[in-house]
Figure 1 (cartoon, rainbow, N blue to C red):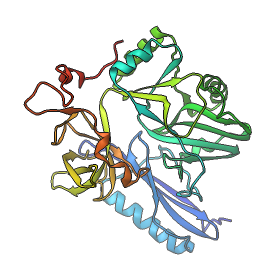
Figure 2 (figure 1 turned 90 degrees about the horizontal axis):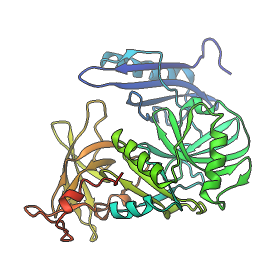
Figure 3 (figure 1 turned 180 degrees about the vertical axis):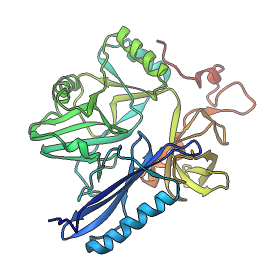
Amino acid sequence: MSTLEHAPASSFLFYTGNGSDKVYQAHLRQKDAGWVVDYGNGPRGGTLRTGTKTATPLAYKAARKIYDKLVREKTSGGYTPDQSGTLYTASDLAGRKSGELPQLPTAITEDQAELLMRDTNWGLQQKADGENRILILEGTTVRGTNRRGLFVDIPQNWSELYSDGRTVIAGEHVGDRFMAFDLLESKGQDFRGRPFLTRFNHLEQIASAIPWMEVLELSVATEDKRRRAAEILASNGEGFVFKRLEAPFEAGRSEDSLKFKFTETATCLVLRQNAQRSVAVGLRDDTGAMVDLGNVTIPPSEAMPAVGSLVEVRYLYRFNEGKLEQPVFKMPRPDMTEDAAVLSQVTRIKVRGDERSESGDEEAEECLEDRPRC
């Protein structure tokens, strides 16, 4: 138990200079028989990347020394104290397998999206621009998992509820909000084999009592789907996902969940750091050879990605056998493995000096600006 002399501590630090708007949190916490120093950092309002400065619990004096040094380093570097911010949990299970894996939507073309707009067997939801999360609620405990099925830290206020029996909800972690889109278990009952529409209706009932959870709207009628797609496009959303209403839930890549994105993204490997706050990124081709896809600028609010790490890059298209056109750094991808950094994920190809795509479509350049017919 903590005493007055051995008390936990937290610092919320913000930096807004040079066009940046980022937050850093440091937490001195009791764990097992000792103390640990955890941290979280990232853009203000965005998803924080969390970690620890202590591999194992330490004596209070040693942990306090690390904590104080960390806070001094940040404040001397331009951060200032601020009492706002989202406190993240420090899960004892972080990094361990949860047994829960997400359903991953399959990408489709604009023509395929148009067919599904008219098919009322399919509903449409926004593709939230965050990190894949499955939440497991049991009693007063809420745990989060990532795309790889590993437990991860989540905002502490997500734990402020009670679940009568095990409930499992799939969604996206966006900032300090959870954007829910599917229900896998409810109060100990397995919903995975039930139709998606049934699962969604139950999800709305559960989420209505949870202040930090928002359910992604489901549109079914053709007119409603076109309206929602237009709203997502107008708000600079990433895209949308079609869900087959009668489909059961199955983990892994799914043909019952189909995504259409307004711009493309790729999970890339960082090859090297450049002098002007940019990194070179690449992907492996079918032979295993690394293909350099050019440089991506890293915003001042983001830490420079390490060589060998994975990052998500948004791009317009790729020149045939060349670089990515208009690449934009989206976020680091600690939830992915290097196996994901393959060239086959880049599907929008433009032949340099030609008005046609690699497939010979004379309207390919226009189609690179894929938009739903709303």
